[in-house]
Image (tube, rainbow, N blue to C red; front, top):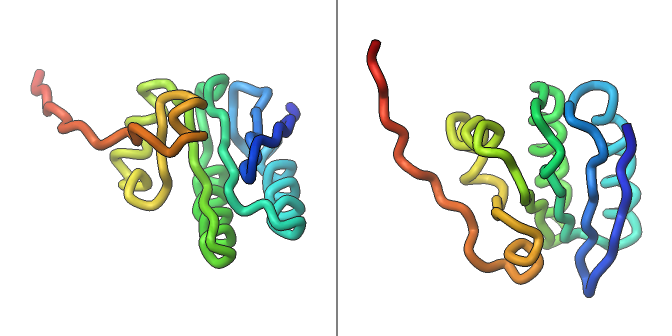
Length: 124
């Protein structure tokens, strides 16, 4: 469970190399984001392309990281999410707090943010 960093212009891309975003990786991510913010990097993109599940601790980390970045006039953006993970963000309305993008290029250029789609209730 690791993360790797790439920089481009004034943004940092954090690639998450695990399938579960839980208590095993969240402390590493928390420390990494704190270090980045201290160094002046406040626009951070998180690559969620390998994430299959996430914990409430991970959601709490994302909210706290966004607050820290916003205080420094930056933001946390997420890209590459699977549809089931994306649905979690829509259901708990985190899409109104974090920027979500389908791919890295859109996130880097801040174009085509994902917008909430209406969910259809299916009765059995």
